[in-house]
Image (tube, rainbow, N blue to C red; front, side, top):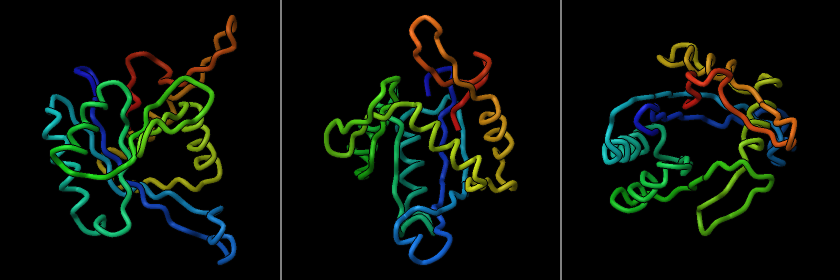
Length: 171
């Protein structure tokens, strides 16, 4: 995050559910939020080291996939994670566009509406599970409740953000 923003780390576990043939198709799963962290005023090298340590901790060592928000200042963290930390992952730049695209190996450009739409499906179907024992579970719930779509009536363009400008949507 920038100076006034939080940096956030969320660990989600994809849990397959349903009949064997449904799971094979990859259609039915739950997303369990297992870990949440947010902090301010932490230098990028410290964020990079924290992510590296977290990925090396059980049970994340096996079958883990790291996805990093490369939007804005996230690009600097992406460089550090790939460079000095030596991690392999997908970097996602969140856009206001209409189409997803691959911007080089492991680099994606994804419209915010697509991310929000996927999250909305998980929430409305009850497939997003947030462990209430997590320190920032209430913060995540509040951020999700404060999230709104705004339509510019002149252009028809949609944008997705926290309802009030002072609210954060980092997690």
